[in-house]
Each structure stands twice: as C-alpha cells, then as structure tokens.
Length: 89
Image (tube, helix red, strand yellow):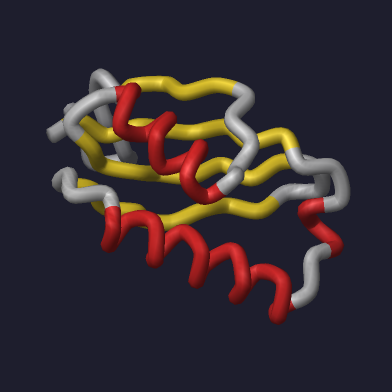
C-alpha cells in the first residue's frame, strides 16, 4: 500500500465547527468502510482554507474514488516517496 497526501481547497475550513468536522469525519469513515478496497485514513490537518489529509491506499485512483463518493474536493494528490524526521541519518 502507498501513502498519499491529499490537498483539499475548502475556503473557510479553519472556521468549521466541531459538529461540521464530525460530520466530515462520519462521511469519510462511512465511505472507507464501503470502498471494498484496502484503505486507511490516517489523519487530516485543517488550515484556514485547506485540509491536508494523509491516506493509505493501493493507488491514487482509489484515493480519488474515496473523494468522489464522499463529495470531498481534491486539489492535488501526492504520493509519499520517503519520510524523514529529526532522527534521519
């Protein structure tokens, strides 16, 4: 499986209420459970006007299918090639 970063342009994302975020979460989880594909939503980062999501899937096509079924915007999808952190040597 591959890891992806999904950029979603969503003006006003940073002003979404906890209830609205919970609704987005419920929709995403429902779509994941009905994809019939191996798929994991890891986490998402909400900024003022965008949401950046980390997902694990077999392909970009499956990531885009998740977005289509959930009616989520997709600005860009990036496949993660490497991960580094402060312990990387």
